[in-house]
Length: 234
Image (cartoon, rainbow, N blue to C red; front, side, top):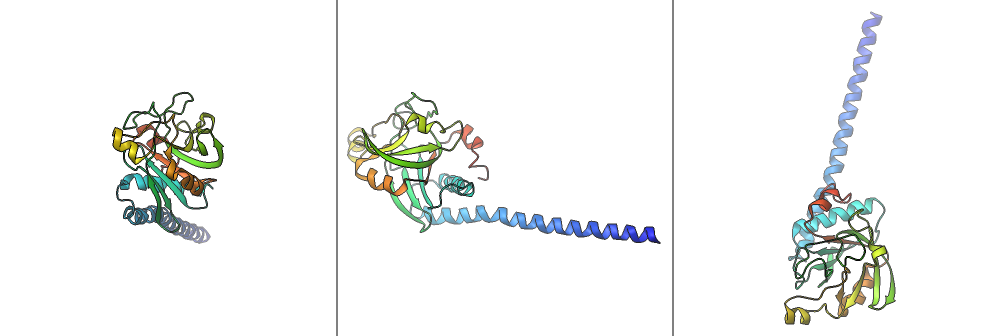
């Protein structure tokens, strides 16, 4: 009889553990599902204001942003998105305020001269290449240099852009980035790897995103898309 009672107690304990594990897994599933659902809703909201930004790029950008935020980056909820898959004569840079769900800026941005002509199709993390880098960046401080007000960028994607500071990849204004230049030549000019902006908007954009916001530079690069720690839940 004592042996039978012990067996019943053991079975009851196992059942309780099983039920607790089931509830725990259910809660974990709910948490895991809430993030993509939230991102999908945000994609729909922001896409209405940025219709030329592809929804898959925006979703990846938001995924990277929230993963980085979870790791302790960015508490201001400002996200800059660059789509290097678009031709350079189109406005392919957006600055979003994720607190208010508004687009703050949409403008032209140059890529490096070794990345391609109208389209950027080659990217590098090595110094001296004059090519752009892709991935997630954290904005740092500003300084005044040969290009005027400039913004330092720290690459967060190992192997893809984490040499940005050593390469002096910065955001700055440039005379060759403008609608007039694009209209005359069918493209804008090329930088030495920096995401150069029009002089007319460089200062306000730099002052908006400086000191600890995130910049997501996208291209359909298979290696980066599958290796980035910021895109794992995409």
